Image (cartoon, rainbow, N blue to C red; front, top):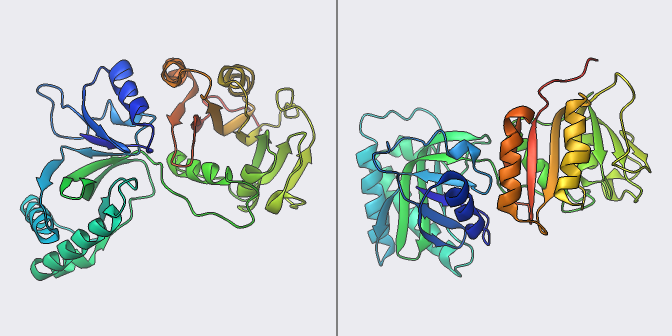
Length: 342
């Protein structure tokens, strides 16, 4: 397989695979690594492994390597492979045709665009209807997907797969009213969780200031209690659906018998402190139904922290991701296993 991640975190993805899953990494580059197939392993989606990975963004299953010095040479090899593997397969709806590579290689984007355009022109001559249905976007969900996935590791070297696993991380659109960059993280978290706050739901945002996460929920019609001694800004300031409480996030609790639909938490605190004194008690006491919680790993070993979180995963129903908009932090999402009564 070829797995992609946020550039700069390749070593952590490799450690996750080797130390936590016993897999072998054969090669890596900016934002990607290659993983050896276990002996005798099927070429299908690796169901036990892929859904559990935190640092992976998109995994290409059984990719085929092609090399070529010219645009036409690469496009012809890719189109030939696509047509050959398309035999017996019917495409009746939009299908993902995703072409990408490391942004760190200056000028690679132009090369990718040129090869992709040439490929589409070649495909139109053979299968115009199929070419017309090609979409450059990944599905907005987590899980296996079939299409065409072309990853450039250099100007003349590509890996091509017909099957991939979408882990969920992706770049999100900003909002000029959002008080902070952190807004993008919770917007992305909705994608990996598969749902978002809706009108009439209640949200508790611990450590809310300056209010990016609170604003994200309120713009969808949710009622938000924003807990932070600091000020709210931008679209969160004086928003009619946001109640700002200047209190300590670690001591805040919902009124008895009134759990929140959502717990948000993005505190710059020790991750063990946040997990033990916020996430665990909130879940154990049934104070929320869904949660999005960030844990900063800048001062701890992230793989050690990941190992601890994995051990508790079955009991809490959480999923762990290192998102596109995350820095040195994990985003934890999930549904509480035992919600409190209304």
